[in-house]
Image 1 (cartoon, rainbow, N blue to C red):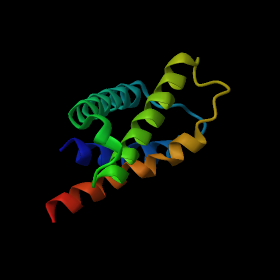
Image 2 (image 1 turned 60 degrees about the vertical axis):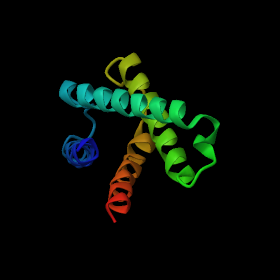
Image 3 (image 1 turned 90 degrees about the vertical axis):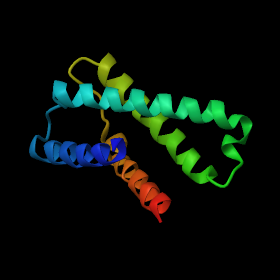
Image 4 (image 1 turned 135 degrees about the horizontal axis):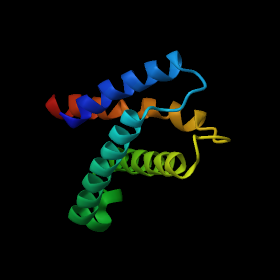
Length: 114
């Protein structure tokens, strides 16, 4: 359910960014992004605790590395946005482009449901 919400939210924020070029994200968008980053960070922490050192050496290794990358990238993006004033002088184009990778989580759900 969270992954589906995250996918829909990624589509919403992408449309918002296109319609509002030059403007930063709304307060609502920032709040939801922070909530999602916290959720996925906690999920990743639980997975790291459960798998221990085998987190990077199991059949889901590539998914785990993708999850780790996305959580670190999203955390960094949110930290930069929260610490900057109005996002002035901050170019997050590359980071926003990596949002597409979040949609890869949907592929994971489809794979699990198979």
